[in-house]
Length: 363
Ligand SMILES: Cc1cc2nc3c(=O)[nH]c(=O)nc-3n(C[C@H](O)[C@H](O)[C@H](O)COP(=O)(O)OP(=O)(O)OC[C@H]3O[C@@H](n4cnc5c(N)ncnc54)[C@H](O)[C@@H]3O)c2cc1C
Image: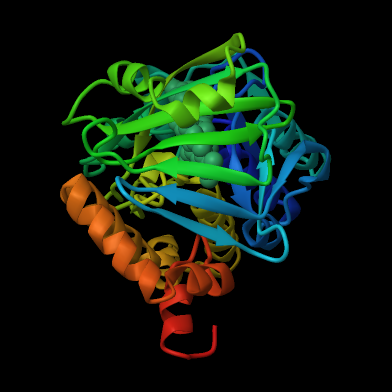
């Protein structure tokens, strides 16, 4: 038996690393010719990086101590005593994962686009288990008839050659007239500053949202007439597929391909990484003890379903209310100590910890 992984993004590489460590024959096919992430930005929780045993030190760009959330008439500031999240260079991070996967025996082939014809061939060999780690618009998912992802966020990011003044903070701007469905952001990226927007695809284009966002005074102050270096549009899936494993066809989807993304922030690296770890372990148990591959979905949901639900509630709340109502709620929450609560219990991957903190339960 061997594992064919389609896509050498973070999820595919973590799966390759884990499978190879179990001694399973893992082959990764990546359509890009070289390892380069177009979404070079990445803000990841330190907990998440550690849980996934990702060697992040060389990729570390900025340590983040907090965030400022801007609403129409109020700002919420969350600040921890220690850095809880890092801004990382994702190309460096994935290169590290690639080295680890290869070092453990996985084979990675670049410049290999896995078309539907190739998938037909691969699935024709009953010795193959397939992992679809091929991102938001997954060929693997559509070829094998998985249920669809229903909601997408369109993004546009630009990187400017200027160091962010307050580089220990990210700023998020909630403005439903500009970025309905997500937010705009100003984030540090090493010596540069990243400006970005996300908008629900039903409500507009990300290029229009960016144009409006660039007019904000906070954004103008942050980029200070600096030169844009690079940037571009992208897409984030924000709904989970109803099914992300097909036991009979021996196909498992991980990461963006499965829609394993936090809908309230658009972050998918940690959720997808955990999916890759769980899927690999289930494959090992399937090969050694004939365990069911379907366990992958139930185990992932066992760990993340409540987090997905909370992210969805937060997302629905801030994207469906008017700017003034949202701002009113934020002011009210501020009055009742939300800043202290988030600073103490805030966890960008697992918001259930905040609720547990509020209820005084053990994390
Ligand atoms: C602007 C922006 C900012 C983001 N910021 C963050 C953040 O700060 N933190 C965070 O956690 N997440 C962030 N995300 C989300 C994050 O980028 C994704 O969740 C993550 O990349 C998913 O990893 P993946 O490996 O599942 O998919 P991908 O990274 O999309 O990798 C899929 C890989 O499959 C390859 N592929 C696709 N089709 C084929 C094919 N047919 N044959 C072979 N190869 C194929 C692609 O080339 C790609 O390399 C951001 C996303 C965007 C757009």
